[in-house]
Length: 219
Image 1 (cartoon, rainbow, N blue to C red):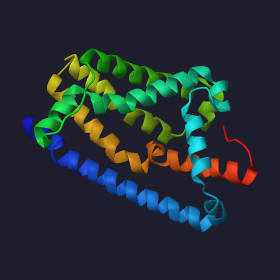
Image 2: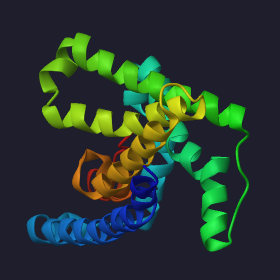
Image 3: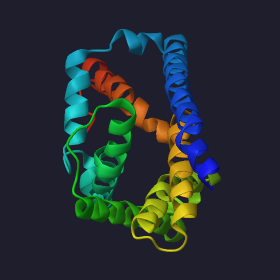
């Protein structure tokens, strides 16, 4: 069991981050090349002012029309993304491991706060799953990849929660937790989770088009 743990926390972590970094570079370059080839005119209108205006306004909860029309979804989406990003980065157990390996550390959440944020991520995943099952228009558009992404996002938090509270077999759960985290990191460039890479550029692109060409707001 220790051999498996050492493997998933050692070579597999390096492999996951290598896939994430080089995969992200490849996807970003590919998307830029494709946009330049198919829509060079709009790229020429890319504008810092309209880009930041769009990004800023879409970051404000309930500012965009889409956020206003779906208040519950807006709240769950914001809570989900904040907790999804902040919890693993600010979790004390993760920071201790990094400090032991690299000698660097930073401020961490209390364990109780991280526990609550973990539960919020799991609850948000359950909410998103419920929408895909019971809301007709969402169910119609749902594909197998949507369920795969939801599973990839939820598993690190479910296994982490169970391991932290030492429910079931701790050694199996902690290995499953690290493995699920590695899969999530490696999957970012090649699944719809890549919106965390492309969202800024997509918003800048749309914001520039609306502001510079259509003379309108895009939120």
